[in-house]
Image (spheres, helix red, strand yellow):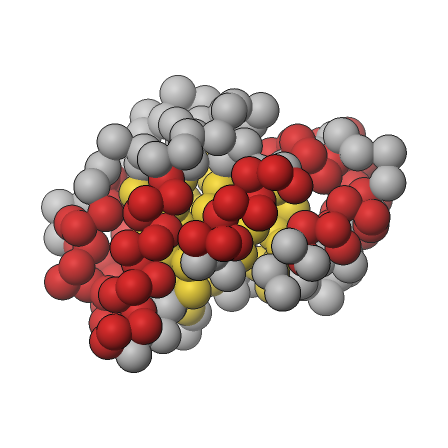
Length: 213
């Protein structure tokens, strides 16, 4: 059974708490943080989800699409992040960033863009709790799933199986029932879905269907 992580990037921010409660049958809540520098868009800061943490019993899965994750990591942890994921492409000291986030007492994840080879992560796999494969270019919702992401997922699953690594594999971008099935078959543990959930007339139904893939 897949873990489903609704992405609040696709929610109606005019009534965010009600939107989040409407998807609280999912185990994770995916929170995209964008700074307008690392990606060409701006989204929410730590204070926005600090208040959500007390209202819903969901794992706060925070994805930092920002140029300086170390500078702001503590703020996001203090706001209630359970998983804090940064981008491989955003930092010069990958191992140092991993160790710093771990020192803050949360689980650490790393993400790679569609054009980044998955093998760049090989030396860090034993240190990670989560690996997020971007199946669209990060920054905007509603994009089409990039199928070359499936080979990255298969590679990460194989590395985990062969080496007894403990990380979860997550995919984000263009996820619906069709692409979600492809991703789960390839080895994904967590499906991040925004548009397909929040635009659905029956959000609980689509969450259940994604879980059952």
